[in-house]
Amino acid sequence: MFVLRASLYSTAMPRRIALTGGWETGHIMVKSDIYSFREADYPLLVSIPHNGFAIPEEVSATMTEVGKSSRDTDWFLDRLYDFDVTNDAGMIASHYSRYVVDLNRDANAPSNQSLYPGQNTTGLFPKITFDQSPIYLAGKEPDADERSRRIERFWHPYHDQLNSELKRMRAKFGIAVLFEAHSIESELPFLFEGVLPDLNFGTNTGKSCSESMADAIKSTLPDAGYSHVFNGRFVGGFITRHYANPTDRIHSIQLELSQATYMDQSTKNWLPNKAAAVQPVLRSVILAIRGWIDKQKK
Image (tube, rainbow, N blue to C red; front, side, top):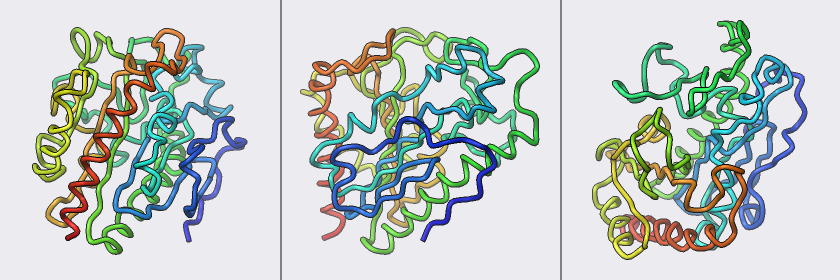
């Protein structure tokens, strides 16, 4: 049984609990104040590390108003991926903002090590937003002790659960696939030029999953009506790269979805008509992965 690490912060449960609707049907559920988790009944795990926007009061007191807004959250993804072909998949979704600590960065890497060398990015403890606004008040950035506390409190529990579930899936099913769900604004000059394609798949340039799995996904996309790219600006973050081990039948892929496909990017509101249009495309992607998995199991 998973045991939650002792609290280092006097925080209440975040006001938004992930995994609603179909995600809570007929599965073993864990709801901590750090994340929501559903055990997989099929060898597919959906991870949403930037799903949350909660910020502990002690941290919020050190932030600018922009920082407190958690504007770079991957908004609504637990809702967007809540459809029939994920009903038996596992899911883990964060509750806390990436501004507290970025779960998709390596907590053990040197602080100056970039996820994307030679390109702009943000680190384990972001100091600026994607539009280069300061997250912290002057002189209030977390010191070494505070960074260590946040790693222990927020980063480790998410990764402990993620790692444990992938191992359990591999042992039970003989194969495990990790689907890393992300989203981002379509125009962010700090990170990329121009307008981002609608669907940005990352396989760590072919190293995180079987080529045949990527091909299965590609076969669903030509007529989808949305632009797409594989291993473009986003080739997969730390989670996609770190947990992948295709030779041991643990495969991972990241999808960085343009937020223009399902929400109002200025107001951060869900747009039902747009979301309803892109969900069948996402469903087809998941179906392609499932079809590939089923062939491997035979």
